[in-house]
Image (tube, rainbow, N blue to C red; front, top):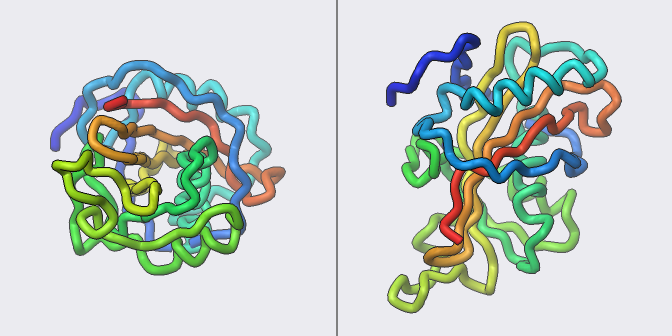
Length: 213
């Protein structure tokens, strides 16, 4: 689902075991800043951390979980997927069944499965698209023909959920969207528990980390 510089507030990756209430897409504006050079999900870039901490205080306080439930995990992943595909014309979305590693999430570990629940979950909350769990090679056509996603769809990979500064409840997760060779992008999302949010989580920030477009 690497050694990096230490930040003043270190963020530890937590492969959170747990899944979600129905998500409603957040309204945070995507940043188009250039990648920071961070090559793993272990720490948030300084720029994003500053934005996240400055925004965090606007959320209505909610119980801060010491570990994510499966409901929370599915909600956060679902919010990321919805945000990634909301501007897409594609009606078919293939979800990588394994969590990606590294900034581009192009390395997967079969031991870190996304689980079967997210595809069914997305079908329940997004009636405009069909979602399928599929590996990259099964979802993408011949590379010599452009490596386009089958059925004019998109291929989404999610990263591990990372915990933020202690006491904030902030979590972050990477998500990438692939359409074909030279047509892909990766984003870093941050969320905080919010008692007023329909799904219990507020989208604090979205930062574009890279783009092949």
